[in-house]
Image 1: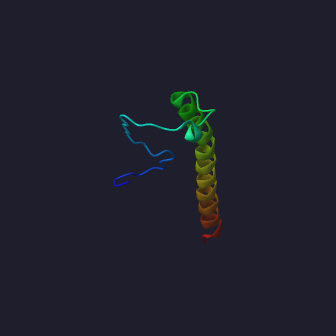
Image 2: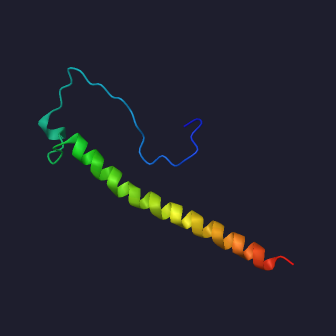
Length: 72
């Protein structure tokens, strides 16, 4: 994504389907609500993003500390 400076966990898109037939065999039987499912994905992905940020901050701190303690 051009010009993006942060992590993007979920790609966004506008999809419009008109006059589409899906046979029962291919339907997702447990998919009840697109909005509900999307919210569940966003909630679980936020935890992963938080851990990545914590890891990056810890790495930056440890690198700075090692540099500062090694300086004469």
